[in-house]
Length: 162
Image (cartoon, rainbow, N blue to C red; front, side, top):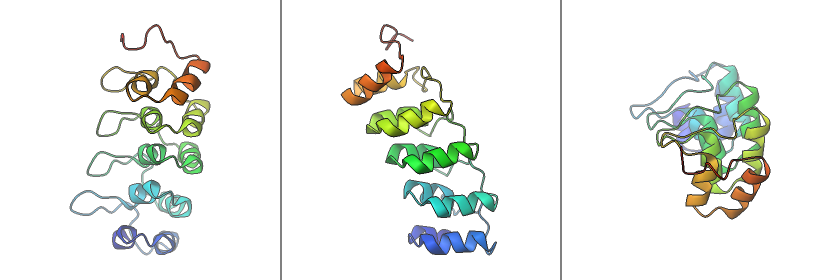
């Protein structure tokens, strides 16, 4: 299954998972997970089949990435919603200490941020540097993201003072 995922043969990944012909939790020597690869590529059906066959929704790959984190960073809105419905933890940091909300803010994915906030991510969630999504958006010059976060109630007076 991992070989098919590395080759981006998503129909095959979904079929193998659906039919139970491969271990959905398997990883290679680098800790690569088919779930994280499929999420990064925005492959909803493959992700869904992997989850149904036992892939842990919050599993980290060998580089510390989760499916929700890579989907948020890549702007895969429907996949982010699906992973949250399947129980993904929106407060879980990636290897670089950023939660999915921070990753979406850095990448300028306003719709993904809105979905994360609507589905339970705290607006003032901190990363490993004690920064909010507003802080990281300001540092990366994401003006539209900043406008959205301020409109949602982010505390501009506390930004950068945590």
